[in-house]
Length: 135
Image: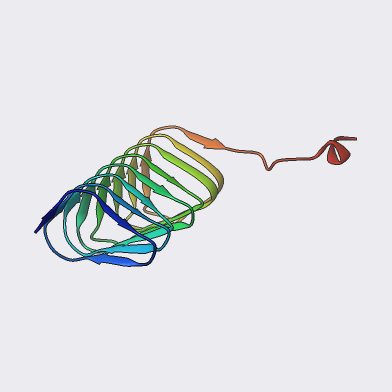
């Protein structure tokens, strides 16, 4: 059981009771339900629930049995589980067959497998263009 703030430079795996914020440049693997905000390099959430916001410099992986109750900001998202919150993904968002999103989606690109559900708006961001590309 841990309650408080966890800061790390490397990878973190949480498999026990945890309540608090996590900040690391590495990958966080969640294997049990936690409450708190995550600021991470990347995230893998497996068969559990996270209540809190996620900010990831890399990819967020949400497996089929996993749930996130909070906003997700990341470079990429690969989701087969459920997210209740707004998504701001700078690169690709990939939604698998059992994925369920309840919230707005802002993403660079979007891949949706038949069966995935999105309850909310979708906005595709245009790639940044330089002045040379506009003539």
